[in-house]
Image (tube, rainbow, N blue to C red; front, side, top):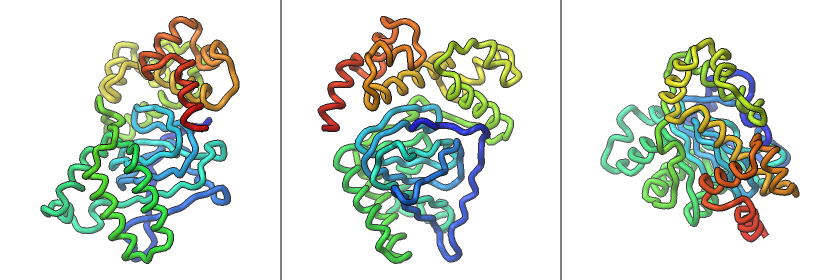
Length: 293
C-alpha cells in the first residue's frame, strides 16, 4: 500500500442499513475499498484480507503483512484502510458493529466472557495468524451467502472463536491512547501525515514541533504520552516498514532499499532492520521468497 494517511483526520459515521445492528461489506478487484484515509469510529471493526500484502497502520503501530490479514480493531482506535489496487489481494471482507447495539449489558453475561475480554484487548488492535486466520477468514467470506440473522449469529460465533484463540499479536502492546478532544486528534494526525509524506528526508524535531505549534520538549512529552514511543522511534519504524515493503515488492538492491527508505547510513540500516525484524535485509528477502513462492 503506497497511501497510508490522507490529509485530514476523520471521524467516520457508520450507519447500518435500517433494521441492522452491524454493517457488512465485501470488496474485490471490481469493487475496491476506497476508504484509505486515517479515521476512527466507535464501532469495532473486523477485517479479513484474502491474500496479498501491504502496509498496515493501527494506532501508532506500523507493519507489513504478507499472505493476507485478519485484524480486529477496537472502538475509536485510529487506523487506515489496508488494501488498494496494488495490494494484490483476492477480496476484503469488513464487519463493523457497535457493541451497544445488542443492549448495553449484552456482553456482560457469563456466556460472553471470552468476547468481552477480546473486545477489551482489541482497543490496542489485534492481528491473528496461522490456522485461525484461515479458518475465520473462510467463515467471514461465507457471510456473503447468509441472511441477516444468520450473519449476526456467525459474527458472535467468530468473535467467540477469536476470544479462544492463542494465535494473535497485540499491535500496540506498549499502549496507545488518543484523547477524545478534537484538538489532540488534529495534532497527532498532522504528525502522522507529515511523517507519511516526508519520511525519506530528515525530520528535525523543531520542524515537526512547529507544525503542531508546540515547543520541542512539550511535543516530545505529548507524542510519548499518546503513542508510548519517541518520535524518532516512530519515524525509524515507519522507514523500516517501508523497507520491508520494498524488499518484498521491488527488484532493488539492498543499498537502494536503504536510501529509498530514508536511511543515509547503510550500516545503521542493517543494524536497525535486524533489531526490528530479527533478520538482516537479505535474510528477510530470501524468507519472503520462500513463503510467497
